Length: 316
Image 1 (cartoon, rainbow, N blue to C red):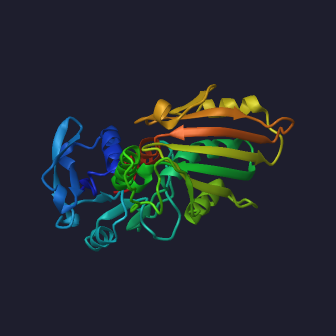
Image 2: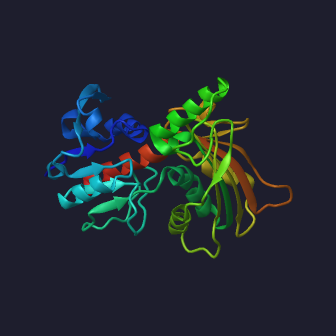
Image 3: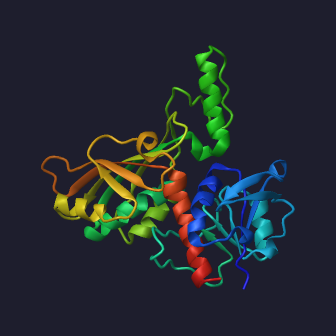
């Protein structure tokens, strides 16, 4: 049985987070191939106490692996890996079908043995789902409003670099260029078109519901991190302390009384923080909170690694 796996775009922000988490799944350095663009081939990246050489992902033989983790969209790599019989695991593919999410290793995702690729839930959804699923079990959600604050790292290193460049230019009274983003991000804030796939995936995981979640996505001039303002209404009145107790039982989640931010509280963390958890006055069926997290670690990497571990134990 071939349990060797590969990670493409290994020099990217998402891959960095996955590599930090992946040793927990028991993957040994000699079972892992790190792949990236030709310009990065030959570089060495840290993994589980070793430093592995990066290989050219355009020339790599994907048939030598059982599984490819692809943390960035790449139609050419996707096609090559599938043609060579490697099971593809990625949140960045456009294929139809249900998304896969595992909040922890104990979950049992529905995966067909005939699958050739698995579309994982995206980073923001992976941050939100543990809390929303827990609350929906306590009492079905009847209305859901979410405002997502999206940092520059959602566009990868190019997004982070562009924000840094724009900030330096503005502080030195120089002209600002926008290439990665549709307009200047530094010292600015602007909305982004709603990703309907997030809404579709929310409906998938929350089960049959009669409403459509309301979603806003806002680009903010922050290098790293994720934040969301969430307001929801349940089908019936709930006891606030029951909600708090249920959420406190979740792994890697902290409820904080004061304000929380992704940099001050969740920077490079595999946990998330809820703050301003409360109910509107005289609205016993409502709940609101502010969530902050490292989207690449708490969101993306946790899901990638949990699904990888499940596949290696039960699927491949």
